[in-house]
Image (tube, rainbow, N blue to C red; front, side, top):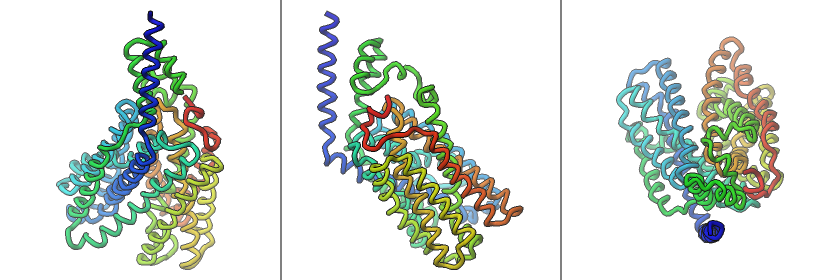
Length: 448
């Protein structure tokens, strides 16, 4: 009798899962992708805007440079803590709900920052930007489970390319509106589209793979471990490992090596992101004697080229494998930036070498986030992507510390090399310790 009931339950469950998977049509995928792109653009806008406007805020509140640096550091720490929470939310409460939360976080962070009245308030409010920053981790988790294996990276590259668009948008809005509505108004501007995107996300369908995982979790909770194992084997989810917390699973023996190597590589890579993207004007003006106005044009040009880099690396990752694409891109970026620092002289050589470095550094993140989404099993895909994502800003903090500590003793160019280029090259080497994944594999074939 028990066997018959189990068979009926399994047939019913398999039918419901099949219907759910069929419900994710091409139109639904396109809708989800478009919304994900704009959500990431405005999350980037909010994330970048804080660093852009911090000097203006400091002037109004009469903060010293040291105080501003301390506030920025504590904001980074609070952002990191909030970012780490997003992964378990994605795996336990659903990809769709996590997407709603991250978009709401960007809107709340941007809106409440406009009402800043002191350092403590600012640190608490900007912690919410950790939700917006985690947008990319949830996006890759959700869309990797909706997209086909053949063009998973290429499709996602258009969405991840929202980063340079968000950077340019923050710069443009600040330049145009800051004199008229002040820094508080500029933050409020970012709230409106984020709220609209959150409302549009209500129509998103949940990932079929999350629905499958939820059914397995229900069986485990009901004590039906045999049934959970049978269902898990059929749909590619290891139910026995799901009894542990998602964070614990990240460091289990079957995936620990991958988590550590990928995490450390990503953290070191953000040394270069901090130096050559966040502190780019300092690098160009102080390091290469480029005027401030010319450096702004370089940033616009190089970020535009970086968007093409996203699409290029997304395509190459699908064709040749993402890990190899990432390693090649990061090493080429290190070579490009080294040439800029020690060989290039004059406007055009610096522009070309800097743009080449940024093309490979920033563009490779299309392959990197697709790789994050596919390299962790469904049961911890959200936690894995969010954890690795959160380690990036940690690298930025250490990079700033090293750069500040070495610039006086070594000089600007050597300090840039030590705090940016060397960690970048090392990150490419460390990626060799992460999991090797052949191109065009289905998620269930990669890991359980």
